[in-house]
Every structure is written in structure tokens, then in C-alpha cells.
Length: 136
Image (cartoon, rainbow, N blue to C red):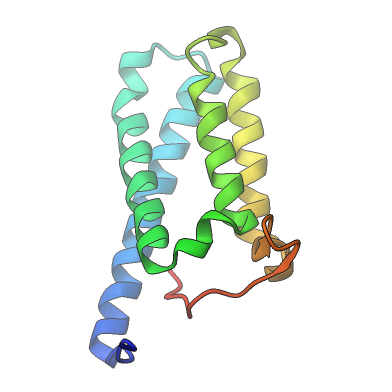
């Protein structure tokens, strides 16, 4: 059974919610990133880290539940790679700044790269478009 199109009210509610989540995510990344890059004690930037991880996980869940193909498109794959790099913060703690910079660079590729790159499927070897996105 096909889903009905979003009403204008639903569209704007979803768009504003996603925009708010993304704004909080960026705030968390800048707070934690600044603390990491400036070698500030962790307890001073931990709340930003939690903010970034919580909103990042929520945005990922949003994408996967909207369309599972996100997981095989380069935008999803690179997001999972970023998570793997973040997991290296524990065993490679001395390299946190370098790891963070790598994550930020990958984030720029995912967010600002051409749609042909972001929607490239690593399974199909070509661009695949998913369901219409609610930008935010």
C-alpha cells in the first residue's frame, strides 16, 4: 500500500524538526570539536559531545526509517565510516584532533557534495534515488 503524500502542515513540521535537530547537532559538534582541538578538559565539553551524538543518532534513525537505501548510498556509508572513526577516539585518544578533522572533512563531503556522489550506491555501482527527502 502506497503512503499518502505529506500535507503541507506535516511537511513543515518535519522540515522544522529536522532543521532544529541539525542545528543542535552542529552546536554539539562545534562545542565538542572546540574542546578537542583546544585540548580543553573533557568535562567542559562533554555535554556538547552528548548533544552531538544524540542528535546525530536521531538524524541517522530518521534517514534509515524514511528509506533503508540510505544505508547503501554513499551518504549513509560515509556516515557509518564517521561513526567508526569516532569509535577510534578510545584506542587512539592521542589522535583525537586528527580523527575529528577527518570526520569533519567527511561531513562536508556528505552534506555538500553533488547529489550524484551522495546518492551513489555502493551495492549497485551507480546513483540510486530514494524517496523524496524532507530537507532540513
